[in-house]
Image (cartoon, rainbow, N blue to C red):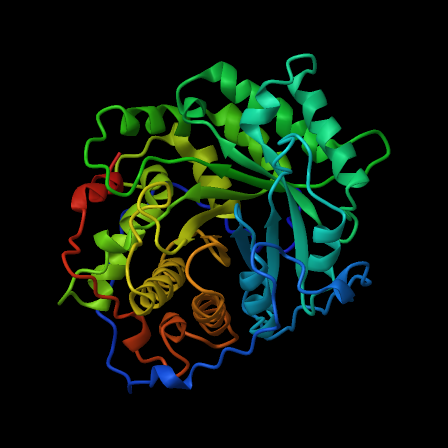
Length: 423
């Protein structure tokens, strides 16, 4: 099997049961005032900071230090622009991390990647930054004059024309696979052909393993009468996951965690983190859960190498990205809790290893508020995945849990997601 750049592969063997989270140990409290928002000046709604960056040379990629226990892959989904978040990542970069920054497709033609200014500005950032061109699955579904393989090849041509540098590490992301991929074998065949074309590119191109995002039902869901059987059927399609394993670097499951469903007042940080993972890890939990059949082995193997939860830093959402219409302070605690939960999960499970992703909204709040939220997220990831760090460092530099202690009035756990620990 090929080696995956920037991802430490961990293979799953057999079926493993669900592990419970332990209560965090006590640690000294940190003052939130100690956080520093060392951000570059940024124009909201774009990934370019200023005119001087346009046409700037690619920043030389620094090597990953030997002290890093794993190479961390951080994916940022930015449908409404991500300049503030990218700047926060740059100002608070982990030496162990690759930052893959999504560039949305052109609004006027969703089959065309945006560029060349945006990918160039991402590569010019100090650190290991890579531009990721969005392939809108719905828009490309309408290009019926091309086979699905040829659609992938054509998109790679358009990436080249738009200034993406695959040789340096820029890549593509499918946003996003439709729900029918779980139930329709014909759709799965289309996806296989599409990712083959994206991986191969036009004749003479360098191959590129990219990112695939998958839509899931919302966090508020309690009735899984259709969803869970469909997911079981999909997870036993060994041929599909065998092909995905050849061409896909990162497999992101939409996990737009609602603050209203995890930030229960009076609950422990451990209990809240457990509910984050009940939802965020549920496809992998099902594939590795009690009673999972041998036919799900290829899905387990694939998830061990590629799976990451696409978590939620979209503030003030009331629908598409869950329920996060909360105060800025509560949202900052919510994003830190999600990083902590993901970091804690990898210690006892073969996925997601060093892979984590967040959706971001450049239009929420004021410029200063967005900078504050982005800084909290960037610092949580940096500190939680630093050499020698424990999961609690995602909550504060000292390991205290105060920054993960999210509390939202009226919030209540949705324990229906616990059913995914068994087949």
